[in-house]
Image: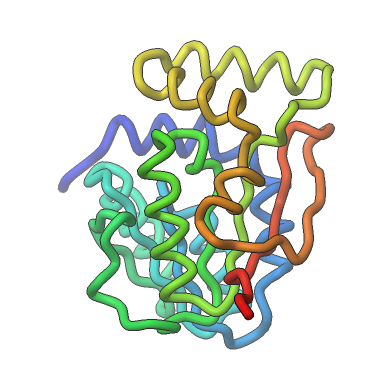
Length: 205
């Protein structure tokens, strides 16, 4: 039986840290909606949303994460979720407005700027509305902010460089504007460390 050490690490140490964020995002899904979870990781959010959504599709670029997500879905016997290995910068396998909602959590700060914009543009093409949770910019001072910065610094490499660029450029709000999105709602969570934002395509005259 296949097994992912990386997936197990995230499931044990990372997923519990953002349980509150996951529950709030889930509460924003309307009953019966068709949802796509971009950069779904271990599938924890996808499986949470499955209790409200009609169907959930989770995609990720990591084979380890998709393996973990499929195993979790199998153990829980969740029938309305599917997981696939897919690059979110090219979602041409899905037509325009294929989903009611596109969701992503704590992924935007991991991407370089160009990649982040491309992912948001694909999300707005395939879904009628977007729900995005990521780091607030700036982070509200306090222990939660210190912990978050420490985790990002420990990740090192491109991950940490992208995090610093994301924060230095103004975070999610600037990325959204550059991708042609407008904010419809925004709420701080986790002692001001995170924001949960609902967006829609920018209306042009």
